[in-house]
Length: 114
Image 1: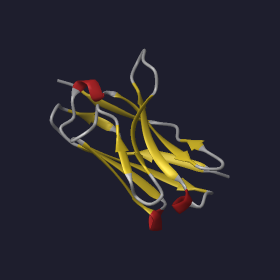
Image 2: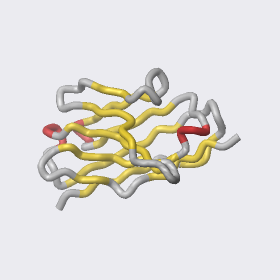
Image 3: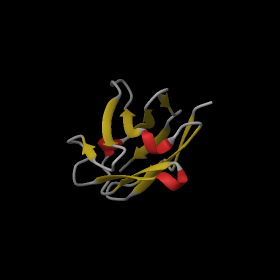
Image 4: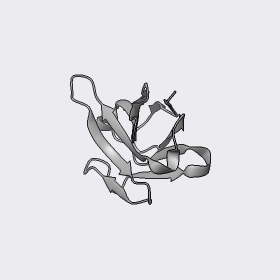
């Protein structure tokens, strides 16, 4: 059974940092591209960052220069380091395992408040 579980969300002030973690099980983790998405209230879910199997990364413009995605294949875990957070980063952040079968996590709330 494929399972993807996010953690690390929370309540922070602008300019602070958070590190999200996503632990996957039931898959051959090293063969999956992994991604972070987010969904703010009243908005569509949007891509934040992707890390491919070989380690190549892609970032949406919203997080470039502030977010860093990484993976630890030994721990079946992907991370999203978010620095210099802004109120517009407030959203539920979802982890996506891109492989066969694909899988979504349940999400973790990030709130950046002034």
